Length: 475
Image (tube, rainbow, N blue to C red):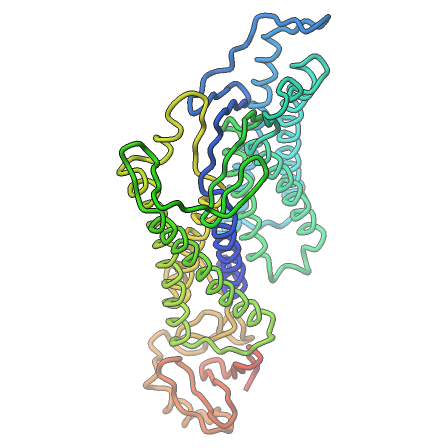
């Protein structure tokens, strides 16, 4: 069965939630407005919120240099084609890795791992060629050996945009995937017991690389020209690289007929920020707790009650994040604009571009990751994964019917399938295998508990579990 270490996974996901909530609260980029916005991507250009196919010229003369528009079109087509090929290669790689995680096959064998490395290397090369062709087009070719941005003097701002950065990050992830598979091949024997977890995180990394590649290839922010872009946050706003605290006049008039009190808007912004900061603190504490437990610094024994408490805490975090997003959406897309969409008011005409920004995306990531952790908690609590036989969570705390007890003991369960707790006392009395101690049956845990020794005893395997060390040992 595929395996994930539950404690480590929860700690990592909780850290993502905490960082995302903090960034959403403090980075002033929930909305961004570009009064004059022209964006270029391979094969597409946008002015304001209106996009069209690139207007490829027939010929263009700059001084003694003559350019052919068909070559520009070929360059754009090549950039898109190589990005798509890279995404297809990563999709194939992801399929192989996830099938391995579900134990349809094993990531074992030098030939198989070499093929996977070749696929990862090929995807990285395709991403590199894609961005190289586009960068060379705008850094030299389109302006006859001079950078494209020299055509747009100050106060216009010109540079590579978020889509271009997404492709670069996908390229970096391809390199990481390549070296991860190489390490798996070189240390195949040493990492055998952790193969399930390595495969899981390798699959996650490939999925992230694919998602960023798709976003980059499908959007138009490869090269951006804008004037005085404004980014709006909960506590501050920035324009042309200069930031200041939000100012709230007595009356806020977004449209001529829609006027709202400024102090009410301030309260709404601060409420969203406070909810996100509470989410950051709460998820950060849980991240540290799970991390310390994973590394053995603290010895928290997670019985059913603590598992339910953890589930409730993450449920509360989900409530805080949902409430923050609801308040934000209601404020900017209804209350502040009297029922109109915020960007339809500011980005509806001319070259003005309006859209949600990085901070909004970070809040959505925090919300999504919280839902994922809650699902993992429910699976771990009810052991649904073991019932369906597809997943196994490695946790250092035993649970009734936990397959980990059998997996971590050298002796398989010798009891019959009809064996149950009511027969345990009789069996021990007749076999005489009960170790010394004041053993009392713990119905909730499904094991015997010794208060004096602070140990659990599992009769069928004749194993003792130490909550302090998280280890099973023969009785």
